[in-house]
Structures are given as C-alpha cells and as structure tokens.
Image 1 (tube, rainbow, N blue to C red):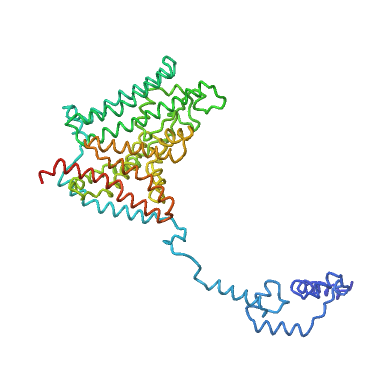
Image 2 (tube, helix red, strand yellow):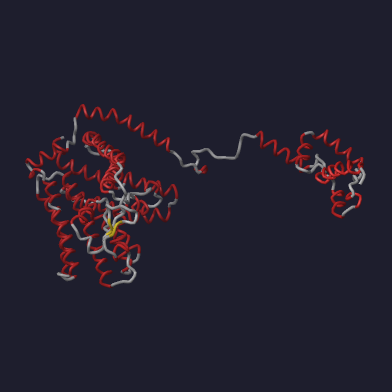
Length: 499
C-alpha cells in the first residue's frame, strides 16, 4: 500500500463515520448492502440540492436545527410540524411557572399536615387560659388540695360517705377473686360459682344505690362518683368471671390448638423485658393481677395485657397538667348553676377530653398499659351507631364482647341485639343520674332509647355531611338537654322556694 493510500485511509474512515452517524437513509442502505466503493474507503457522493436545503434549514431554524443535529436527526427537515411542536413544548416547560393544582385547604388537595395550626391552637389556648388561671387562684385559691382532703378524711371519715362507699367496694373485688380460685381448683361446682357471681354482681348495683338513697349526708356529686365507680366495677367483674370461665372451658376441653398464654407456664417476654411475664390460667388468679385489672383503663379482662416498655415522664407530666387544668372550670360551672344557663354541650366536650384523653392516658402511662385506643374519630360520625361505637371504646368493646356477640351466637337477630344494647345503656344512664339526685324522671332513659329510631332514620335517609350534622344536632340538643332538665328540676325542688 502506498503512502498516499495510508494517508487517505484514516481520513476516509473519519468521513465514513461522520456520514453514517447523521447521513441519509440511502447511505445507510448502501452500508447495509456492502457497497464496494464504500468498503474501499471512497467517499459517497452527496446530493448538492440536499446540502443546500440543509444549509438553508440550518440558517432559518437556528436553535431547532442545532437540537436536531445533537439528537442525530440532521438528515430530517428541521421545520417539520413534529419538531416545531416539541420545541414549543420544551420552551413552555422551561418558561412556565403554573401547574394544575388545588389549594391546600381544599379537600381535593389531599393535604393533611396541620401541625402548625394545632400548635397555634395550643398556644392560643394557653394564653387565653392564663388569665383565667390567675384570676381563679387570686379569687378562689387552690380548690382541690389532696393533702387537705386526706387529712380531713382521716380526721372524720364518716363525714365522707362516698369515699367510705368506694373503699367498701374491695369486698366485692375479693369475693370475685376467691370465687374464681375455688372454681379453678374444683372445690365448688360450676352452678355454685355461677350463683355466687350473680349474687356478687347484683349486690354491686343494689348496695351503693341503697346507701346513696338512705344517707342524707350524701351529696349528688359524691353519689355520682361512688355509683360511677361501682358501675365500672360491675362491668369489670362481669368480664373477669366471663373470661375465666372461658379459660376453664378451654382447659377442660383439652383443645389441641391453644394460644401461648393459655398453654405454657410463665415465661419472660420475647422482647427481652424482664419486668412483664406471660401468665397462664389459673396462674392469673392473684391479688396483683386482680388489682391491676381494677385500676387499668379498660373494662375487658384478659390474662396478658399489652404493656409499654417504660413510663414516659414528659408524657405523664403533660397529662397531669391537663388534668389539673380542669380545676379552672369549677368556678365557671358553679357560677353557671342557674336554670338553662349551664353550658352543657361545652362542659360535655371538655369532660370528654379531660377524662378519655388526659386522665385515662395518665393512668395507662403509670400502669404501662399499652392499649391507648380509648376513642376514635367520633366527631366525623355520619351515623348514630358509628358515634356510639367510637366515642367510648372501652364500653363498646365490653358490649361487643360480653353482650352483643353472645346474643348473636344464641340466634338473636342484629336489630334486637342492638336494641338490647341501647336498653342496657339506657338503664345505666338513668341509674347514674336519678339515684344520686334522688328523683326519678326517666329523661336519661328515654333519651337513650330515642337513639334507636334516630339511628334508623339517619342511617336510611341521611348521608355524608348531612348525617354528620344530624349526629352533632343530637349531641347538642339531645342527651345534654336531658341532663339539663334534671339539673333544672333539682334546682326547682331544692332552691326554687328561696328565689
């Protein structure tokens, strides 16, 4: 090969590479077909008209032709409609500052992070209540002094009948425990144990109500507190005997598929905690286990409750502060005790937060009780049944586990079972209001039973926001008005002649 050929070879190869990268379709065809002159390194002929058109297009279209060359499409006309459209879209994307979107506060936006607004509400609540707190401290002093209450009770305990009544409830607690122990070892029969439990549970309701109605020194507030404690104990001890009876039935049947808590002895938790241990029946029949259940913020008994790993001190202090802050409401409530001037609905909402969030979380944190679902989003209720199932989760779980489902297993239809649940709830509402006030008007009972047709009407004819509005109306002018009527009648009976 001559020197000239060697000098021409690389130059020819560069030209061939350049043409093959951005050349026309004809050149590609020739390459595919193995053209001899192309293989030999000869430069393919170029069409003069095509080169001229490319040059004119390059000068006319400017940047569009430059983009076309970079993408390897220099052989196409730069002023084609597709390339013009893509260029316009590219420019619009680079220069646009608006997109199709909703405002954050619109429901269609899907935005849900309102932490800053909640913090603002907390700050405004603290600032607005700071003045009330200072005024109450200056005007009334400390209204609830635990040390003073304890000293007065120890000095003259008979002047505190409600406290004595609450202390006497330990008799019924121990009676239920010892009955279960005798049933576990078989010293008493199943029928005898059932009779003892029925007598104990019936006495839990009769004894405190008879005491409240008999003692003239029992105030309405003390009566409500004591009867409330006994009602909670009634539900707890009913669940206690029911659950232990299930454990005996499982043990006697010698079922093969048993849960770990029933089939194995006490062992440490799998998460490495040495404080809490799993127990099996009848190892749960101890004083420690019984009183843990009595003070735990739940009405449903089980052998092994979920436990939190530690006590969070900051969380505990915040809940304690919220509980003590309820002391500020006492003067407002006392000053509002006039007919039809009590802010009943507002008091009900404040009581809900104070009891179901602050107090129950405080007790749960002290006891390291893990299940903190004491309520759900009842404020979004679109039906009456959804409200009653979600505003008080402990009671709802008890009714579902020990009352509603057992009736369904016996063949009772759902409507009659739901009506029976409302009937039982109406009885306890009337029990907690009429007995402490020592007057029977049946307003609470009728208010609860009115929820049955209201639930049917709202569930059938109202949906969405209309159903939610109906639930809120029932809360505002429903049971709070029934309670207000009791307060009005009590005020008229005891203070009507002096005004």
